[in-house]
Image (cartoon, rainbow, N blue to C red; front, side):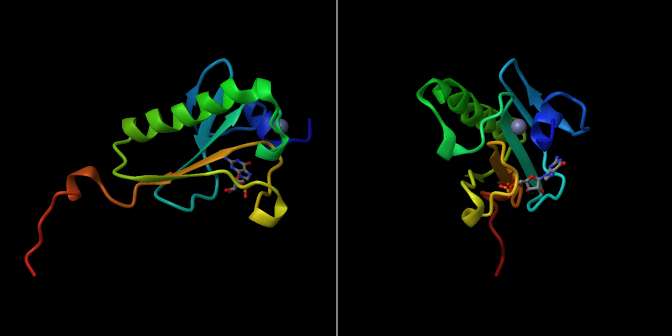
Amino acid sequence: MDCIFCNVAAKSLPATIVYEDGEILAFNDIHAKAPVHILVIPKEHIRSIAHLEADHAGEIARIIYAAKRIAAARGLAGYKLIFNVGRDSGQMVDHLHLHLLGGWAKPEDREKTFSI
Ligand code: 5GP
Ligand code: ZN
């Protein structure tokens, strides 16, 4: 198997897994670009959003819903969800993945007032 994320899903490549169910997996990005940077993938090899078929709808919904629950569990005040699609967008790993990026602000900082 020469797909990095298929190997992560098969547990033959180590990763810090933060969520798993029968269809999807979430793990820390190895080169985090935010204080929290998690990748959520289908266990099934799908190359990108551009390669989705109608019967993948359930997996995509699970991926987005898992990202929402992980963000809530981490107490993220706000976050970005990004799918890079194709090389021109910066997609380097050809196994569909959702980037969950956040952690810049803590929830308790949101309502804080500062003396200026
Ligand atoms: P892309 O640019 O394809 O949208 O994002 C691929 C992401 O996968 C990058 O943020 C990169 O840091 C991450 N990545 C690449 N190889 C590995 C790996 O072996 N393990 C983990 N955990 N993340 C990886
Ligand atoms: Zn794969």
